[in-house]
Length: 179
Image (cartoon, rainbow, N blue to C red; front, side, top):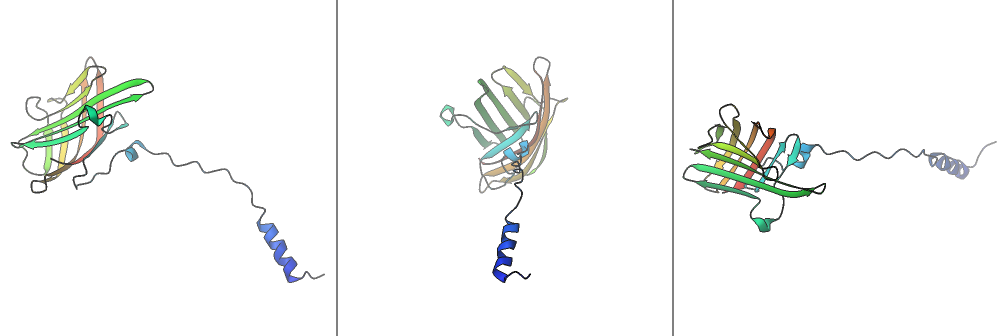
């Protein structure tokens, strides 16, 4: 027995419509690095890093003051980023400051002198202050230092430790700002 062409087409369509329902694909999870701003060199006014493996970016109320500032004066670059947020019912407030003395060109800078070139990480809630020193230096790589357009951008990393507060490991740091 031969089926008419219309019946054959209907049978094919019915057969194709019997798809099995598949499990939904879970959305991709973001890594902590994905939560950081891109490493740009155009004066975007961005700052971010991983602090003990967790994404850290300036946050909080700008009414309390700027969340990220970059200043260049008398061959000294100072970057200050602050964060004040409430997480799981607890206030988290901290600050990261990079200070580079005698900077006049792009390049790698090792910050290890608390009196001139240093990094400061300060957990304001726990009252823990960390500073670079000879045994705990920070590395800052200035990728762009443009005096005409007043743009500075670069990367940084450091591990600091104090007996009272423990260790803080900062990696994948990046900044891009006008000064």
